[in-house]
Length: 119
Image 1 (tube, rainbow, N blue to C red):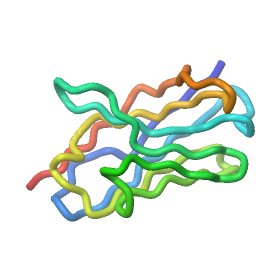
Image 2 (image 1 turned 90 degrees about the vertical axis):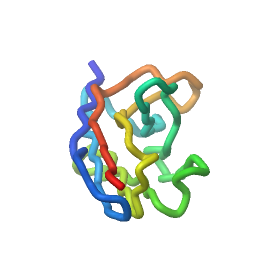
Image 3 (image 1 turned 120 degrees about the vertical axis):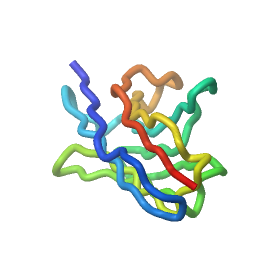
């Protein structure tokens, strides 16, 4: 059974940094894409960043390019999201997700972690 557990959220001032981590377990993820999504109150859940576990190819939403960096640690089976130059509009619940490389829908989700950026 796939489990994704996020950690690292919190309160930070605008311009600051936070690092989110997602511990993945339950299977090998070599043929998976891992992603981070976020959802602000009253808004839809949006894609933030993704990474192919094998090969490390990364994808980013335009709104976070140059500020956020997604990575994975094969030894620890974790996916991280380093967030720099945070803005109040980055405030949201952040979710880790996973999908097989050949399937377009994200079938596995974590419980989410709250990120709040104060102005």
